[in-house]
Length: 336
Ligand SMILES: *Cc1c(COP(=O)(O)O)cnc(C)c1O
Image (cartoon, rainbow, N blue to C red; front, side, top):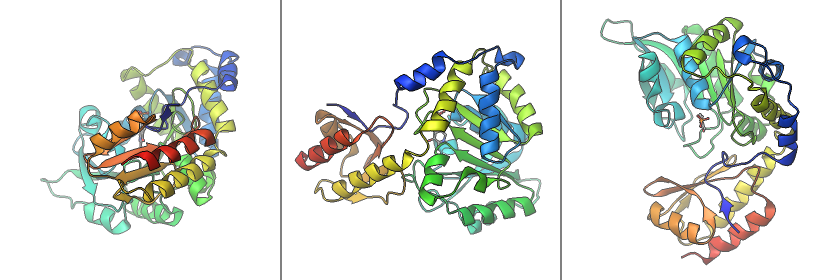
């Protein structure tokens, strides 16, 4: 048996999802004629209480479009040092938008109001304009850490008072909502823009949706086009996303339970120095040598990701079942 815990992006469409894709009604979406894409965009927007949505090929694109559409050169965006926007999007904020970035030093990637306040610069010629605050929920590099909704409200209120754009990188927002017991509509009114990934734990092969005001999304459509992200009969992909939103949200709690079991078991292994707290579907452990233990795990049929020279990440997902969990728990014990 091979168990792949490298990422929740490794899932493959189920027979039922493929069936939904096969029967999708499609049209040319660059002409605005794909009914399934339109349906996905409005369905997702309504779910989160936002005005409009835009279907994109990746979460990197939805984040980068959000930055481009809501900033101009000489502006600065504020992110945590662990954020995906800062670490894993090829420096796109500079490349696409010509903005600078300021980093907060959050605990497991969670920004506090104090940290955000301290990041705002006075209006001097020699400073960029503080323009946009980006939170990530859950925080990938923070081991799937989750924001409390009250914390998001505090940050949102501050952004409103201070004329700052407030963006949510919600690549795993459904994991966060599942963990806190909130519904997507509880986020309504908090953000200017939200990026939602459907190709992570929800199991669609491709696709993220950017949400925002109708005006912002109109601008975002043009930016998507210039980035080369205008797609034609993309309803085939959008139907997989709709299928995922309808069928794979409730079950995320199973992923969280399995992650907890992995964590409990890893915590008992001598070769594991530390296990970061587990709140959702991500487990990060500390070892002496991440490359060495990633290889040992691979030799035992468990694929995982080295996350730093001493950290390894495991992510549970739709295609990781109980039999695989039991297999992994046995293997962990045999490693030394
Ligand atoms: C995966 C991910 C994204 C987007 O990634 P793509 O691979 O471009 O879809 C954005 N933010 C976070 C936190 C992620 O984990």
